[in-house]
Length: 308
Figure 1 (spheres, helix red, strand yellow):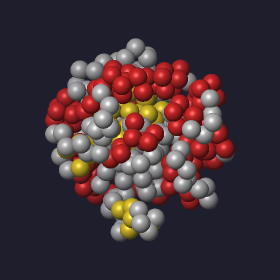
Figure 2 (figure 1 turned 90 degrees about the vertical axis):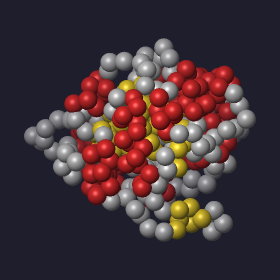
Figure 3 (figure 1 turned 120 degrees about the horizontal axis):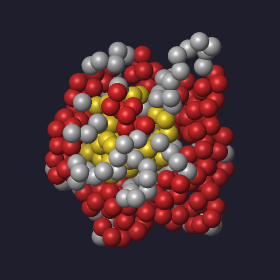
Figure 4 (figure 1 turned 45 degrees about the horizontal axis):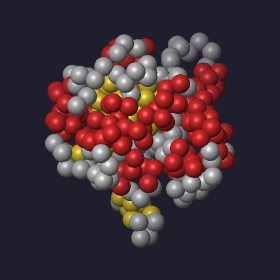
């Protein structure tokens, strides 16, 4: 599928944003709810716009919307009906658009213009469950059931006209097949990004097989890896580029580990400029961060030379 976003990826490296949740938490918002950052679409949408703006102002070319955990089923548990859920999904795209407009307004006079892009997030089925199952996959549902779950939300997000759909944190090939079917005919390009453990998906499938599913998918303009340890990226990026021939997206977590019992992060960040250079050398065209990767890290990516 040809698109302005696909052309931009082909013409030069782009910088992706970092974790939305950590930026919102840093601003004082409690995201302990099962809806995670999606709750703020209903309660404080202006906070989401400010978080996106923070990333644009540190040099991000692309921001991912707050719709990762926003689903008809999840909002229904909060007593929010289908019509209002559709409005909130569309609002996730508009909030990112407003941040892009504000970033453009704040740009210095005479600064060369650059386009700012919006990627509408569609997280996996497990994100809706809010029990960590997106990191193992295999929910006991077939491909057809997963496609029925994803299609309505993707239709609403596509109608809001993002630049690209981010099919992200996909843990296994069954869900990848379902998502690839669900994006057909929507008229918006997509990227497909797995969460991985070493050289396999979280469900244990070889990455060669996983990426091969997207090789001939017309709607998919990029493939990649996200929400995993930084050390797992270089090999996965090389595999994605070799198997599909498509541009590669790469946005790992910081490398810190969540201690569920203590409800705290442990360890130190392993997200370094040296690794970013490795990912670009391996073929990554769109590089950013996921959980615990904040604006300072994105600024360092944006200020680094574009060549690996």
